[in-house]
Structure formats: C-alpha cells, structure tokens
Amino acid sequence: MMMPRGQQLLLPANPWFIWGSLITALALNMLQNMGLWGRAAWLPDLLALILVFWAIHQPQRVGVGAAFLLGLAMDVHQSALLGQHALAYSALSFLAIGIHRRILWFSVPSQALQLLPLFAAAHALTLIIRLLTGEYFPGWSVVLSPLIETLLWPAVSVLLLLPQRQAPDRDDNRPL
Image (cartoon, rainbow, N blue to C red; front, side, top):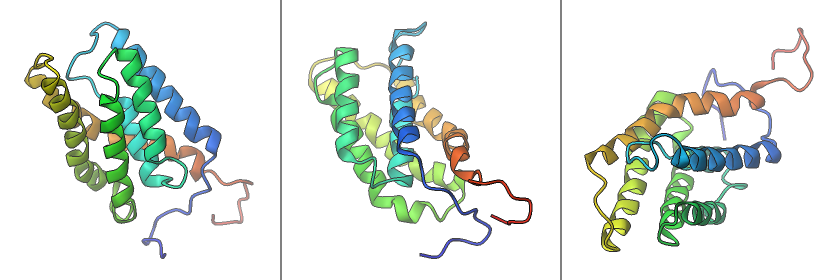
C-alpha cells in the first residue's frame, strides 16, 4: 500500500504503550465518573476515543474482544446494565476497524468529522439500552459528548502517535 505524499513513515507501535494508553483511558473514565460532575451526560467517553484510535491505527492488536472486555469493566464500575458499554464499545470498534484503511488517507480534521457519526452511534446505542431498561433520560446534553470526542480527536492523534514519530537512532544525515 502506498503512503500519501508528505506523510511521515511511522515506527511500529509498542504493545506496552497501546495497552498502557487503554488502561490509562479506563482509569481516567473511572475517575471522571467519580469526580466533580459525577456521570454527567455531556462528559466525553475517553475510553471510547482511545479504543477508536487504536482500532484504526492498530486493528491487529486492539479489536472487538478488547473493546468488549474494557466495556465490561466500565459496566461494573458504573453499576450499569452488564453489557451496555461492552456492546457499545464492541460496535464502535467493529465500525472503526471496518473503515480503518480508508480513514487513514484523510487529514486529522477530516478524520474527526468522519468519526462523529461513529461516536454518535455509540452514544445512541447506550442511550437506547438505558431507556429500554427503564432508566431516566439524561437530557439533551447527551448530544455534546460525541461532539466533544470529535473535537478531542486531533489532540489524541498527535499525542498517541508521538512515540511512533521518533527516529530509533537519531542521525542528522538520515532523512527518516
């Protein structure tokens, strides 16, 4: 597969970094839910964002199974219906893996716009499950969450690709 012009050749992703970022996102989600706002509907789902990133950039290492297990961990933490987040994260990961080859050809802002429907679908799936089980409607602020996740995509892309952009051995005479 040819790379688009001007795109930098990346080093392979370190599996420890991939799984460390996923565990960190899980911990941040858990802290965010216990924090000042509680489980506010407008708060972004950082774990979903990192899952989509790695499902697009490393689909061989982070797949639907990992998304399902991390979703179960979120369900247990939030005392939600067991499988609610697992289903949403699995569907999100499946859709991200389905578009991973196409989406990498676009610039990062264009990627963010194309991922907005995925984030919205995951939140809609979670909301539908909550409403079907008799929970309350969290309000229209739930619409802000996918928008915030979309706005966070460029920052997450730069941050998580930073270790892969470094040359393994610094050399002033080598262009890569």
